[in-house]
Amino acid sequence: MGLPRLTIDLAGIRQNVSVLRKLCQDRGVFIAGVTKGVSGSSQIARNYLAAGLTVLADARVQNLQKLSDLNAEKWLIRLPLPSEAGLTVQYADVSLNSDWDTICALDRAAQKAGRRHGVILMADLGDLREGEVDPEKILQLADQVTALKGIELRGVGTNLTCLSFIHPDQTKMLQLQALAQRLPMNQSPIVSAGNSASLNLLLTTGFPAGVNNLRLGESLLVGRERSHYQYLPGTRRDTFILSAELVELKTKPSVPWGEAVSDSYGRIPPRPADRGPRLRGIVAVGRQDCDIETMWPQDRGIEILGASSDYVVLDLTQSARSYRVGDVIQFELGYFAIMRAMTSPYVSVSYRGA
Ligand SMILES: *Cc1c(COP(=O)(O)O)cnc(C)c1O
Image (cartoon, rainbow, N blue to C red):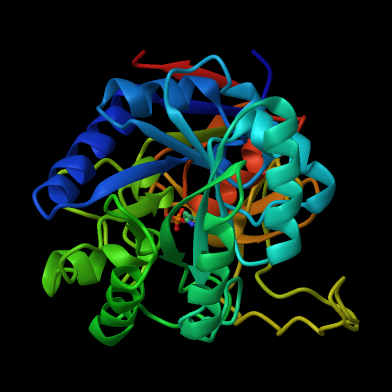
């Protein structure tokens, strides 16, 4: 297999799912296992199910399509594109919604396909991404939805900590609970409290009664809750390892010379401190394939200095090992690096621990 290579530890992911499932189940919360960070990988989705989840969720219909032969309820967790209403009802059982016209398009598509499509209405509780701000408007939408033959109202949800990084708190959860209690529904609604950033609240304060779902991606993949960026006890964080080949290794000054101009974002890079001559290495992987802010060399003596499209530059001075060009350097990946590696056609993906 070629390099760069992403090695995914399925046993580690199953372990994370089991830990999270136990924590949530004890508190009356079921998990929708989110696969969008891993391009809807069916291997990973299968392992979510093997570890006890029953709902799979993704932001993209194309990813849900990849999961269509898996026996689980599928949720589309990005607002559906009106132009994809047909594909949405074909590949998703449930979608998160905030727009009446889109729901009508889903209704027409569902009726045409002879199905009923589930709808969770989204409340914007302050993060200013998707959802309706006014609870009365959500309830009005809910009333309208109950009249549609192709649509089944399944509940309410919210998403926080994704755009404005507003944190879920007890007040917001009580608002969601109050909204859910007023829904025109006979069976108990799904009340979907958010993503991996809502875990901390669940594990400390707990959710109000009836708030019964989380849509989790990052915490299942790498064991990390998002609000304080802690790794949860008993989880594995080394589930995604990126291997890249060293293509240059030389001792160079630590300060560049000549006049610095703007980088690709229009910013002049700050001049690094003078640490004298350093052993610098370059690996053949770049911003196209990974994200240096969310990846860490497994050899803790190696430091990441920077990256361009096709190179990551390292400082290996403190490493206890002696490297040569052609050696493989391994990195533990976090969420954005995983997402980039999974979507880069230049990274070969392999699974272990099946
Ligand atoms: C991405 C996303 C999630 C999952 O977020 P994690 O932080 O990976 O747990 C949940 N809900 C929605 C609407 C999302 O867009």
